Length: 198
Image 1: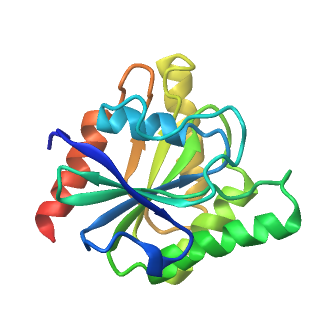
Image 2: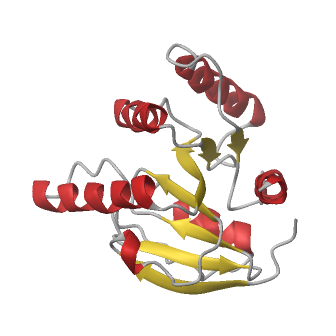
Image 3: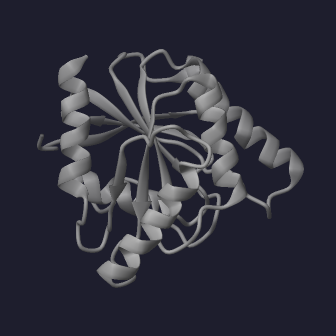
């Protein structure tokens, strides 16, 4: 699949405020500074579509981007912001789970993880919660250009082995880099295949 058109379609804090035009949705989420906005810009070929920032917690709304006039790429607020006040953290959690639990158009949620590090407890808890709720998801390891291919492969395998301690099988797994385009074709084609099967 080729992405030829990507436009901002609206922001919301509740499912009832989503764009009126209902289309399949593929959502992206991760911890702060995991490279979510950069990945979205890389996937869509639009360097300024999602706002990138060095400040954790910049995305505090559910942002819909209309892709090829056929589906939405949804940019969700991140989870696990330890530095935010409790009230703000609780509100972000509510925004995230209101969307995940109640968006009838959500086809799949991609959980972004930094390929350089071990998965944190907050990641494992979030993924476990998706499993409990029966939410279809995939894993996207970001920043795949930051270390050599051997080290990268070993770290990804370590994280997959950790997941297999809790799961009988792994969800779809992708390794990406917003710098050199690693994994772009695989991830976009996977979304295209899922769309085709709907």
